[in-house]
Image (cartoon, rainbow, N blue to C red; front, side, top):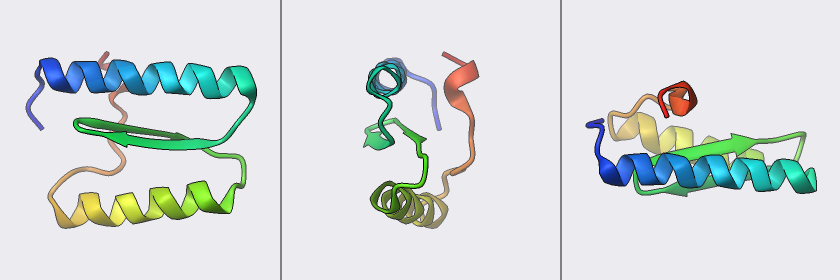
Length: 72
């Protein structure tokens, strides 16, 4: 995926969600235009959402296991 301003905003947003979830000790999965993030400790709904997104990413030519957090 091309690195651009929208993607960078999406990634920063996901990082903010991650920090908020950490503050409240909650599992989450979030997807937006350009990025997604997840942290799960056994929540079936979060796992189902992420599994569905992995399938969509594979079908649409994206790497579902890309770790972009080190690129932001």
